[in-house]
Image (cartoon, rainbow, N blue to C red; front, side):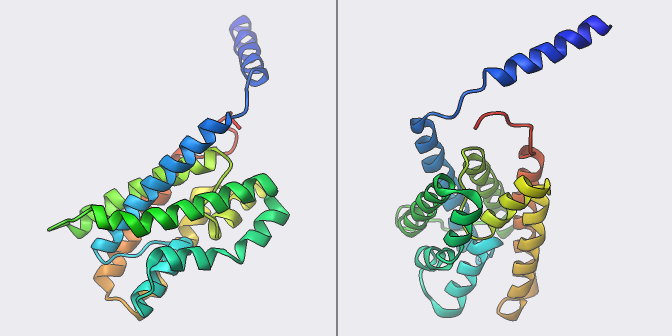
Length: 215
């Protein structure tokens, strides 16, 4: 039995020594695919009149309150967080995050022109939108990028203190979505909370510090 344990430890050490960073084209593919997934989730949320958490949720609140396009609001809301990202997470992370935010803003602006839905169940929009956003953010996180805003703070807290990104993000998201009670009815807020929970459960289950070994 001890021999098997030693072999397993040696295998783990060997694997850790052969880890190679993501290649540039892999980072590009992940950022395009991840932001496209999130943009599709945002389109579903918007079509059903739902909200989400994070800076995307703040952008939705601005959109519903003022009529400003989501993509524009999302880009502007993220600007102050780049200073924190640069100081705490480094230049490479900040540049990747800026690229991801810019891509999401563009996708969220142009996708509605190519997607026309005659009917969409709000429950399906919450669940499917949450899954798409969670999967997209997971791709970005694993390639050392984020969607700015609270994503930056959440990843910093996980790297610095080991706080689970999905759980911390869920706490922030629920606070933002509940704040929408000022401008939205409780049914829409409840479905928005469902979407936020689905999104963050996807992150909690699949993104744990030390589990994904690529960099």
